[in-house]
Length: 228
Ligand SMILES: Nc1nc2c(ncn2[C@@H]2O[C@H](COP(=O)(O)OP(=O)(O)OP(=O)(O)O)[C@@H](O)[C@H]2O)c(=O)[nH]1
Image (tube, rainbow, N blue to C red; front, side, top):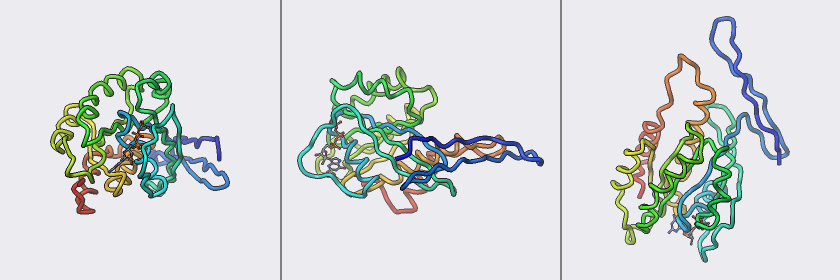
C-alpha cells in the first residue's frame, strides 16, 4: 500500500483561471489524486466499525459484538467529479479507556463522522460531550457530520429523527440516519464528505461553494430514501 500522499498544486493560467496540477499517486492496487483523513467517533457499540465495513466491503458485520481496541484505519477511493479521492478512514474505539489514544489522532483529521445509535438514548445524549471534545482536539475547520445509526431497528427506536435533526441544526452540521445493516445512506454519508473535502481543496474564488446540506437532501430524495 502506498504511503505517498497526492499533492495538489494551484497554478494560474494565462486567462486567469486557476488550474490544478495533480500528481497522480499509484500503488499496486490503488490510484488516487488527493487524499483526506476521516475519523469515526461516538460511543461504544453505536456501529462505527460496521459502518466502515459496510462502506468499504459492502457487507454487514453481524453476530457477536467485538469492541475496537485503540484505533485502526482502512482506505477507500471514490470518484468525485473525475477525481480519485482517497478517504483514509480511522475507526476509533468508543470505550472511555481509549480516549487518550484517540485524542492524539483528532488533529490530523479533515472530517469527523459522529455516530449515535437511534436505539440507545445515552449514546445520543453524549453527542454534546463528543462535540466539546471535538472542539478541544480537532482542527477548527474540520468537517463534522452527525449520523443516527441502526435506522433499520424501527421497533427499538428511542431517538426520533427530528431530535437528531434539531441537534444537528443547533451545531450547524449535516445529519442523516444510516443503517450499517441494510446500507441505507452509508455510501451517501461518505460521498458527501468526500465531495465537501474535495471542493474545499480545489475551490476556485469564482466558483460557488459546495452546499453539503443541499447535496444530501437532493440525493436522499433522488433515491427515494427517507433514512429508515
Ligand atoms: N441492527 C443493526 N445493528 C448494527 C448496526 N450497526 C452496528 N450494529 C451492531 O451493533 C454492534 C456494535 O457495532 P460496532 O460497529 O462494533 O460498534 P462500534 O461503534 O465500532 O463499537 P466500539 O468499537 O466499541 O467503539 C454490533 O453487534 C453490530 O452488529 C446497524 O446499522 N443495524
